[in-house]
Structure formats: C-alpha cells, structure tokens
Length: 89
Image (tube, helix red, strand yellow):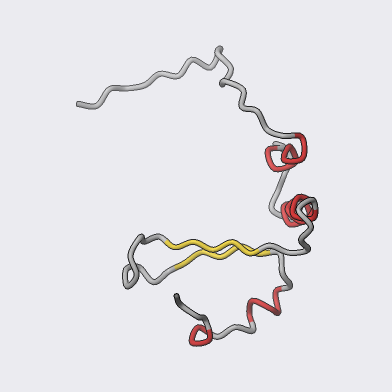
C-alpha cells in the first residue's frame, strides 16, 4: 500500500554539520563552472593537486559496462586514453 507523504514546509530540515572547509560544496550559489575550483581548493588541503573519482552502476564484473568518471586533471589527460588502454583489476 502506498502512503502519501505531505512534508510540512514550515518545519526547516534538520541541520547537518558540515566542516567549514567543505562549506563551499553546499553553497546554494555553487554552479558547474565554479565546482572545479572549489574541489581543487579542498583537495589542496590534503596535499594533492588533482583528483580522480570513478564508479560503475553494477556490483559485478561483466554487468553494465558503463562507468562514471570525475576528475580535475587536464582534459587532454582523460581524452588521450583509449578504451583498450584502461586496466581492469
């Protein structure tokens, strides 16, 4: 049975603690053009210059072959890789 939910807009959402150094990621004015600069500043706090993040939609090898990839490295580095050159563990 489906139960309709009626959120009460008068009740603000429960605040979630976000460290000050991550605040720029939850800034409502953040747009896709400013995101790389924000991420670069955050990863610099960890001593890195770039970051790479990848994930797939399946838990098992041989399933959906699509994967998703985010990075702050130069675009030439990413587009220079041909699919056959990617290593699989």
